[in-house]
Image 1: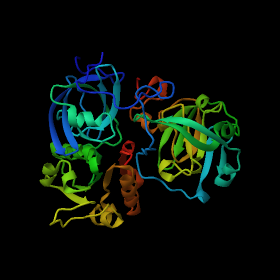
Image 2: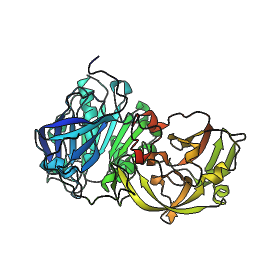
Image 3: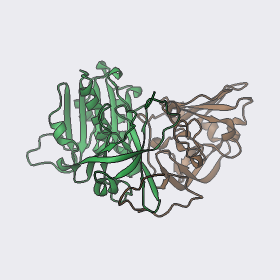
Image 4: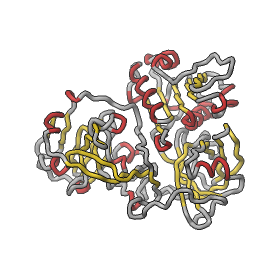
Length: 246
Length: 199
C-alpha cells in the first residue's frame, strides 16, 4: 500500500520548516513538514541534517516536541558554541529546507498502556520529550495521574510556560528555579535534591513510572534520588543531554 | 541529493577524515548516555564472569586486577554523533579473558549491572581490539562512565562498550542486546555509519 511500506532502513526525508515559535530567548520550537512522516511515539527523537551551499553537512539528534498524531515539531535550545542549534534557533525560517531521519528510539517512550502514575522530571530543555508525553496523555484521554518536576534557571528560561500554566486535569507541574526567582516566588528555588523528590514523587506503593531527562548531573542526581526513595531502577527511564557539555 | 538549508554555514573546523567517521563531530567533553540510574556495585561483591563455553569462568575484583593489563590510547565514537579523540585507558585485554575459557562460539552477549545488554561478535573482541577497562585518564573509571569496569570496543559505536559490564555469555547465534532491540544496528561500525537497523 502506498505510504505504508515497511522501511528496511530509516531514510533521510526532506522537511520544510513550518511555523516557528520562540519559547524563551534561547529556545525555539519549529514545526517540520515532512510529506511522508511515518508517525512517532511520545519520547522519541529525530536526526536532523543541514547542508550548506558548498555541500558541507552537519547532523544532530533532537527530541520530538509534539505528540503522536500532531505535526512533527522539535524544540531546540541554542548552544552558543554549537553549529546546528544556532541555525535552527536564529536563522531558519518558514519555507527553509532541511532533512529529517526518524523517528528513533523505542525506550524513552510513553504510551497509554505504559501506565503510571507518571513522574516526569526535567532539567532545562530536557522538558521537550516529557512535554510530548504530557500531550500524548491528553490526546489519548488517558487519566493516568502525572506530575512534572521541572528545573529551570529562571522563570524566563521556562519552556512551554503558557502551556504548563494551565495543566490538564490530573497533571500537576512543580517548578524549581535554581538561579533566580521572581520577587513573589513561593516555589522551590534550588536544585532538585532528595528532600524535594520525597515531597514531589509518587509513593512507591503507587508503582509509579519515572522519566528523567536533562543534563547529566541533573539526571544522575534525580535518578539516584528516586532509587534512594525505593523506585526500582527499571521504573526510572533516563535520557541525558550529555553532548552539550553541561 | 540533499536540499541546501538556506543560510547554513560550517562553523566547526573540518574533522580529520581519517580520524573521525562520517556524520561525527569532535568533542572535548565526555558525555554520559545511559538508559537508567547509575548502578553502584561494591568491589567486594563485584565479579566478572564468562559462560557459554566449556566451563564457566569467574573472577573476583582482586583476581581480575591481578591479570596483566594494557594501557591504550584510542578514539571513541558515540552513535549520538560525538567522537572523542586520544582517550587513555587501562584494562584487561579480552584476549586474556577469553583465553581463560575454552569455547567454540561466534558471538558474545554482554550483561551489565542495571540490566543493560549488548551483542558483539567474538572476532571483534580478539586480536587486541577490546578490553575490560577500569582506568580512564589515569584514574579509576567513574561510575557514571561505567565504573568500576566497562567493556571497551573502540572500533564499534560506543554503545557496544557496555558500562558496568559483569558477564559475557558466549553464544552460537547473534542476538540483539538492549539498544539493538530498540532499532539500533546489530553490529555498529562507525566507519560504515551503521547507526540504525538496516543502515
